[in-house]
Image (cartoon, rainbow, N blue to C red; front, side):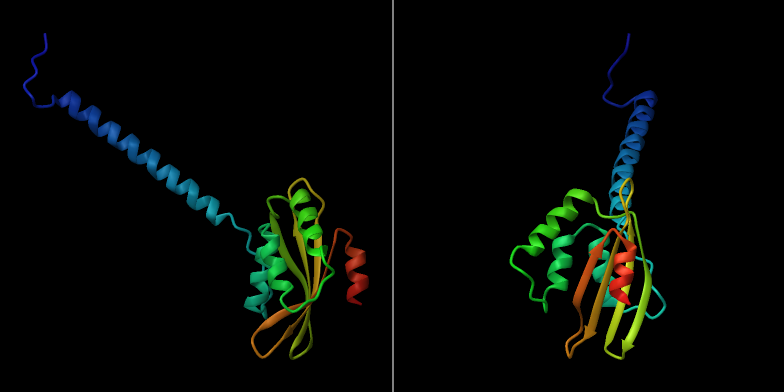
Length: 161
């Protein structure tokens, strides 16, 4: 027979400590999982003379934020009506989660204020995609003046040359 004196027994105290420990472990695991998901954002491998604003644009594209990339790239570009929406839809359907890695394979300064870059994006279980852009420095910042996207590297190389 157990007598309830109002004080927890040593067994009850040990069970409570274990429950608290398990609870803290679960909370820490959930927080850690959330942090690892945030940390899993793709950061493109920059070249030594990289331009931070252009690296930001690469990260937007690599992480599947195509609308933000288009907004960034199209600030100074006049595109055909509907072209960007179609482009975003294609990318979202084919690469819904963005890419697993990205690397700048070419960065050529054609002048002090004009740069051409080619970036390769790899996706799990999908064809890699290549992005070539012409960027220029304005009085405000760097902008992407023209870009081309293709799954065919030869097409991108031919445009670059």
